[in-house]
Image (cartoon, rainbow, N blue to C red; front, side):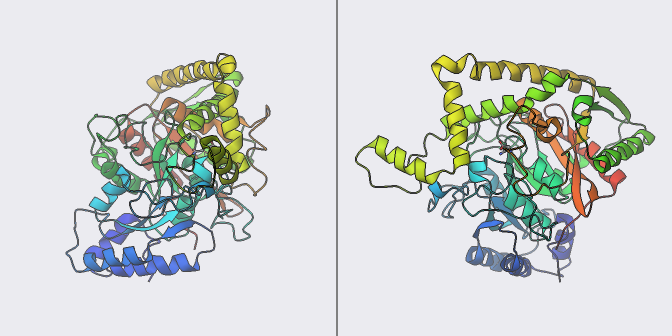
Amino acid sequence: MDYLSKNIYQIHEALVNKEVTPLDLVIEALEKIKKDTNNAFEYIYEKEAIEIAEVLSKEEVEIDNPLWGIPFAIKDNFSTKDIPTCASSKLLEGYIPPFDSEVYTRLLNKKAIPIAKTTLDELAMGGTGSSGHKGKTFNPWDETKTRMIGGSSCGSAASCAAGIVPYSIGSDTGDSVRKPASYSALVGFKPTWGRISRYGLFTFSASLDHVAYFTRNVKDSALLLSVLSGRDDKDTTSSTLEVENYLSKMDEKHKPYKLAVIKDIYDDVSDKNIKSAFDKMINDLKEKGYKINTFSIGFDLAKIIYSTYYIISSAEATSNNANLDGIKFGVNKDADTYEEMLFKVRSEGFSDRIKRRFVIGSLSLLEENQQEIYLRALRARRLIVDTFNKILEDNDAIILPASPTVAPLFGDDIPKKSFNKDASIAENYLAFANLGGYPSITLPLGFENELPFGVNITSHHFTESKLLSIAKEVEEVTKLKDLVHK
Ligand code: GLN
């Protein structure tokens, strides 16, 4: 029987009704992982998961804990004690962390069962799911294996989309969960910056990094938020704001919402099917009483979202990853001096894409360039965030197509398409929610030639309950949820 293609609540019900045990679920997951051809995994918890499941299978099911006994996957840039963790980088091969990340701890405390660490673009820097040390991760929706699932959280997306786990953990610094979700018919959610502790998440860019995750519907997403969010003294950037009961608040009665469409981004989508699915959904929402306002933020501002993101994230990445020197973690090389060690380890350990980010980061941080590049990007960030704050003060959320296309072919991708002055706005705008730290969710919107595409909704800081409630209504309108491709 195929249980892991169901959603969290359905699997929980099967556990409560004793149709299935945690051990059955683990065996099912391991069998599916063995047959999987998407290259989604860095490490598989073969022995460990069976051991946990054997213990749990002798216990009573916790009826008020829907995560109990259910397998999940987690991106390989989260620290997991005694489990190899390399962030899909050659440089970190063989590294075994001595501590657990907070997100992982919280899931283990709920007696959720880790089944695999998943592939990513090296160190989470990328959007194609092809730059990790294991090569390309494939999109389960594309049987020809020529299209990406997107990244950087490629393995987490692929394992959830392929029916191996009902949810998986990723990270989102620019769009790394919300973009792959669009390409794989999943719900991809990152809450407000600070809502979920990042303790133990490998830092890519501290001011932009968010813990994020994939589920197959909005309700499961709300459930995970209740479990994962809340203050953690080990991460001083985590918020002390009270954690709401997202599940019940999401369903509270409310006035029809006011949503904003950003014209400069919407207009940049040229795919007619995506546009018409979006327009139809907007009309359905209007029929429910929603008010839709269209705004222009100006072409120039829309255009600089990605370059601003790229400069700030590369500068922070350069500084945040300076500790990868071959001494403290991962591989080391024979060398007479520290400089020689650094040179050898980093030249051989990093792929060209990572080096390019560090070159850009270093250049923008050089004293003589700081004003012109790095500080200018910080000023641009302020302008972008002020503009979106204003829109979000006057509207409940911003709604837009999550991507201007279905999953692209490998090779037809960033940086080629994104890294020049003709870069598409609609392809790269999602980073505005990282620049501003807003909660943001992608969910399925439609299909084109059997390939999925999604819609993205973003709201103001710490308004997750409202955002989830809007997402749930959009889900009712599109009727697209609980989708897997086996
Ligand atoms: N694709 C974006 C980048 O390459 C986002 C990466 C991310 O969110 N981790 O920078």
